[in-house]
Image: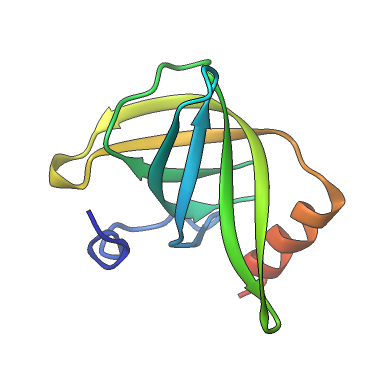
Length: 113
């Protein structure tokens, strides 16, 4: 699974394409590599090698270059659904539980593109 193979999937008009190799930390502290697919003001979707249960809480750590420095943005989320999407893995939609002012600024900049 690679970010480039995920670009062909359409993105709804209220979401923006946003491919980033990230880390998902589940409620038990397990860390897994995932690939974000898109983002909106209320959540994000990603592709993972495993399925997550609806309602499960998690954190997604996303590395983003801000200017010339790499920053790690942390999102507290709840799984809305997770279903197998062919060879891409499990497409998982997440709802943001709380959005810090810093994360809100990041989301707004992505949505403005």
